[in-house]
Image 1 (cartoon, one colour):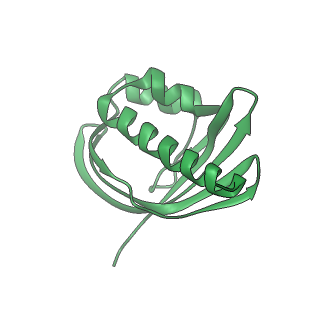
Image 2 (spheres, one colour):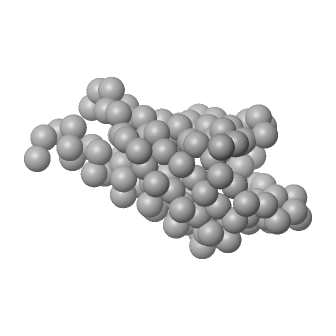
Image 3 (cartoon, one colour):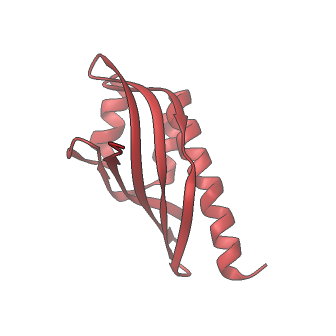
Length: 128
């Protein structure tokens, strides 16, 4: 297996872990996957830091009931940077309102001394 194939496999596993943690409400695991510099851009344009996003989840502002997250591709830019292009289809509660999300997402992972960390997530609604 090449270095690139190994990174792609790792990133697929990490994406599974982060969405699984979100649905389970396992903020410890979710937080451990996120870089301190995380920029989490929601489909409504709001951008949260790692701390703000985790606080909103802990306070019940965001509750994930189901997430399906097909990955279209993982682009390995270097041995320390990977970009995920895919979808996030989810049933969530956002600020007390039940919502169904059908979003395209882009996620950026960076390799830190402690392992791969999610540094950016951006969602765009699919209106088709």
